Amino acid sequence: MTKNKWRTLCITSLVILAPILYGMSVYGQLPARMVTHWGADNQPNGWMPKALMVFGLPVLMLIFHLIAVGTTYYSDRHVQMPQRMERFVAWIFPVITLVAYVTTIRYGLGDHINTRLWAMSLIAVILVVMGNYLPTVPAESASRLTFGLHLPWRVTNRAGAQKTLRVLGYFYVASGVVMLLSLFFSPNVSWAALILFLLGQPVILGLSYRWTTRK
Figure (cartoon, rainbow, N blue to C red):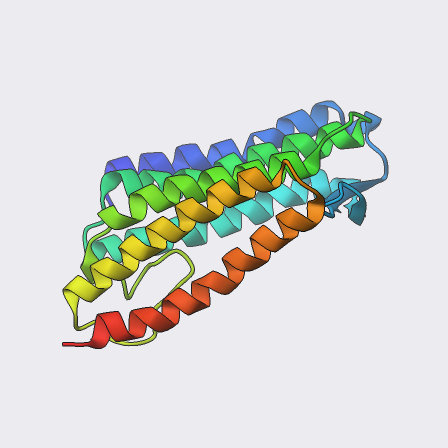
């Protein structure tokens, strides 16, 4: 792994852990049990002890971050990934951690937080950016890394693999836009947008089998 990659990994890891300082500064003002999950209607439906939230959440996110970045760097050893895609993957969990941590702490301090707005907006932005980057990923890497859609078969059709990444890109951008638009309607619309996104990925995965294995 190059020095630049090590530097990026160190910086992003520190960004994930840095919010702990903010949590410690207001620790005495936080309730013993903190809300850590909300429904689409902004009603709390999940709690955890204060110490676990303040110190444990960033550590858990750091673990996910190391797995995601490590997978990307490992893939790059076989098929070179675009640098901007690597940077995007490296900053996903730091951004998510900052938004999730700060909003949770502010809610614990008594602020009114529209969690649906923050959550859906964050997911939508990530999907739109990811959708724009996916078509730039080399077709050879389609079987190793498609951001949650790992292809369990050998890719033999380069054009088909590139088509899969392109269709995924369109799908991610469209899903992100729909999620943003859902904020203007009832929470049920946001739930529907999330469900359609989750159901749409297996459909594309099924189609990609024909595209990537057909000679």
